[in-house]
Amino acid sequence: MFNGFFTSITSSSELSSDEAKIFMEQELNINPFIVKPDFKFSFTTTSEIDELISTIPSSSAPGINGIQTKIFKSSSKVFKTGIAYLFNYSILTNSIPNEWKTAVVTPFFKNKGSNGDINNYRGISILPPIAKIFEKLLHKQILGFLYRNNID
Image (cartoon, rainbow, N blue to C red; front, side, top):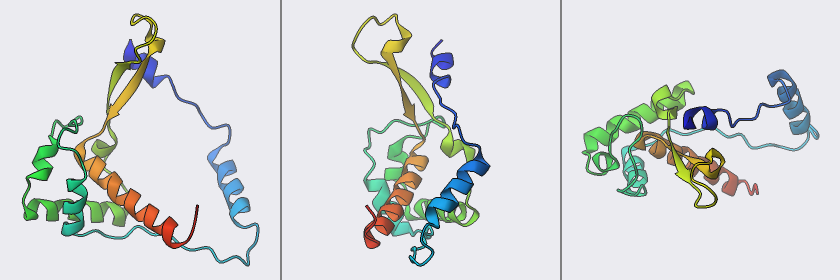
C-alpha cells in the first residue's frame, strides 16, 4: 500500500530533455561577453574522507546494504583509502553506483489526522552511509565553487 503511494508521488517535466537543453543554452548565453567560471569536481584524499566521515552521526541509519555508519567511523586508513579511490573513480567516470542511489523508504506518520489515512504519512528515505559521505564531498565542492565565485 505505502509502496504504491510513495512511488506515485512524482511530477514529470513539461519540457522534453531537448527543450530543456535549448532553454538552458539560451539562458546561459544571453550575454556572450560575460566570462562564466567553469566547475569541475576534484579528486579527494584519504584525510578528506576521514573528515567527512566524522561529520556523519554514529546513530545514522544504514541503507539497503545494512552497513552501519560505525563501520566507517572505526575503519582503518587502508579502508578509507579504498573509499577515496571509489569516489575518485566515480568522479573520473561521471557515474555513481546504483547501490548508492537506492534508498529504503519508510512511511512516517505526520501526527495529524487518522493514522489509517495514507495521506497523513510522508516518506523518509534512508541512503547507505557511503552515499551520504559521497554526497557530502560533492556538496562541499559545489558550495566552495559558489563561494569562491560570489554566486548566490
